[in-house]
Image 1 (cartoon, rainbow, N blue to C red):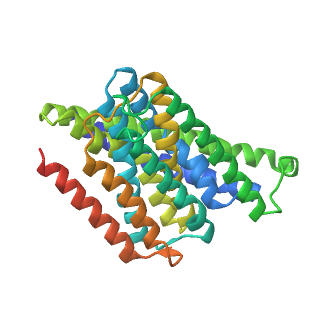
Image 2: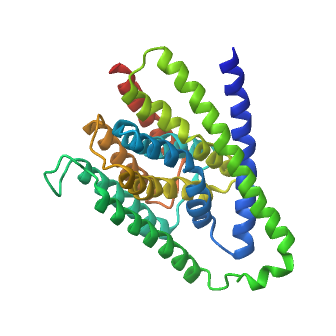
Length: 317
């Protein structure tokens, strides 16, 4: 009974935190003339991926590669198929030409790179992602962040400078405060939700690798889910898309990069099917985006794919 109460309270915190985070992020984006996609990919995307960072880093420190890598793989699958699927069902997602030419190909590229390393494509060592690979991942992530802001500034030449916004410092700090408070409540609520759900699963005797790629991965993606659905209700689908794409890139490049510095990572118990679904999900997203928007039918297709994958995992238990 106590676990159910904690789950409900955590869920309320997640919803409130997501709404506050999105409102603050959109306010900052408008003030500095930053695109909704970039603010979603950088501020919201990275912020909502904090739970994945904590879980994967802790798994790496404990030498549990199933949790470290499985959490990233499972989260990326959940982000694309479930979160964007549900978001598109609520409101068709607008996909810009820049997204199709730059952001989505990068998302596919880093996913393929992670898979190649996981299967020791570049060497015959038992370690799939070593510390040097992690350094490269972190450098690539820094390059992506820099290029995103650079491209956004070129496409919005009238971006405001910090000096231009000093007349509204109080409102700016209010927006920043909303982002910080919303993100804190969101991540904290998510952590309580995952902890209680994991306890219940372990009591039922569910396999740890299964938990890492389903329950933990989906649980740590609750911030992305809440933020994206909130953005969709506000009809800000570019922020929702940026949140998911940014989170996926962050998960691979930054989280695996950091985790590999704590402990070299191997393929663990993650199967070929799991990796295949991860890359297939991003390719499907790109294909559904070719016409500049993901329709409700496209959202239904992605959501159906996620249900099928989840059914496959359950059938293995």
